[in-house]
Image 1: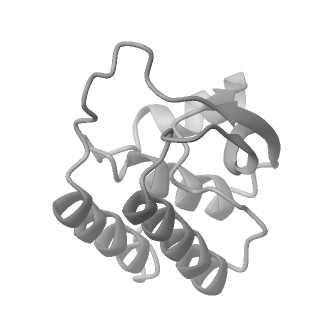
Image 2: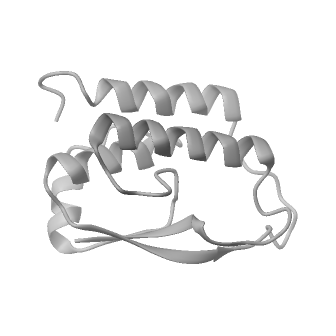
Image 3: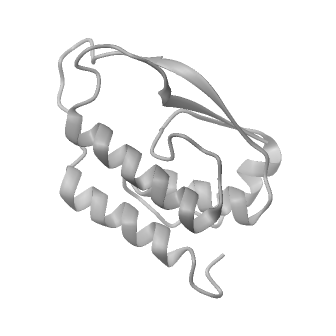
Length: 124
């Protein structure tokens, strides 16, 4: 149903991900593993391919508008028993040296809230 490109299992070129972001991604992945009993290695990856069934499930249920969207997608996939397969990818530094729009603290808090909120009853 879903293929996710794992930056953490793949090759990361020098400068492609800061130490703070690597620590954050690892932390949230471990948190998701604990909360949702999942095997995923990179829940913050934005590299997703969805089949029709997954798109239909996600279409009306995704509420997130920021970087917490991947955490919400992981939760929905697991709650709907969708098959999620990870493939290692090569993660390279931005070619144009542009800045990421991610705010590590603000967006990290939103990701954590999303992961914990997903465990609440009636939160499908």
